[in-house]
Amino acid sequence: MAIPRKGSRLITVDGTVYRWAVRAKPTYCQGLNWGPLTFAVEHADAPGQVLTVDTRSPRLDNWLNLPGTPVTPRTVEHSIRTALATGWKPDRSDGVFKLTLDD
Image 1: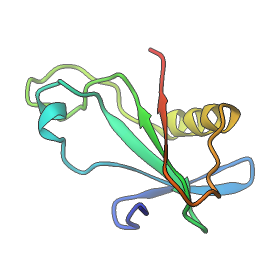
Image 2: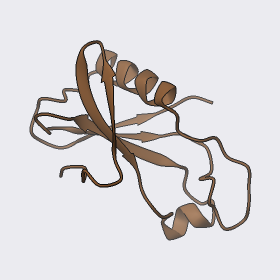
Image 3: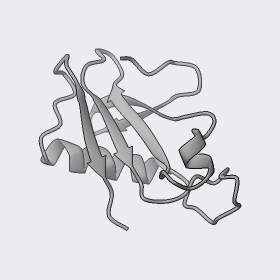
């Protein structure tokens, strides 16, 4: 599963380029705040294992107008470093690595 180029952004962390994206529209669960804002990250040049990050914050475009926190490049950088330290292998070609951020 690769992240589409359209709608994604690049970030460089420790000399490695990654591609990241937030889903364009909320899922039904995210819209009703039954599920948090999530985003995905992968190695930009050789997509492999995808990192999915659960932010524990409502999406900004949730249908209940609950306040949320946006995903910033700083959040993405922190998530990548945390995932790498806890076992994410972006060059591995199988599966998804899940990370949940603390509040």
